[in-house]
Length: 192
Image (cartoon, rainbow, N blue to C red; front, side, top):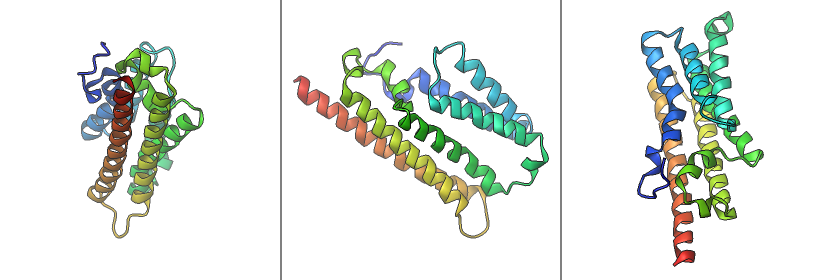
């Protein structure tokens, strides 16, 4: 795909391909709850290996998560988990995977941003730092969502959990947009 700066990053193919296992999982939960993690894992595997030479830590975390859910779906251990723990597993695994990507100095957002950024920017330390910070904000968002769901006061409900998840990920998105805007502003000032 072109690195045309007029294409908004939220329309980038790698981003949507990265969401595919989650979409399959959500649809599977509605129609085939027991098969949902298996279908999501299969989707993740089918999309990951043929199209990429290497996986980033977030891709690996997604595959591990759906493998774990597959095991839970077919064992008694999965039946004994409270709904809040089950719901918090997803952002918790993503927080760990995102944190690993930052610790390994391979921020997961870099894999999504690089194909759409001008080539001369991708090699700049500032572009890497911006992606490092964006990945840190996503790590914090995922961790805040997991903690918020686990610490949810009162009776558990998917609506409350979904609200906490949405709020945490919206904050991470906002912080990411600010960092991306800062980088774009910084680069436009240095090139003009």
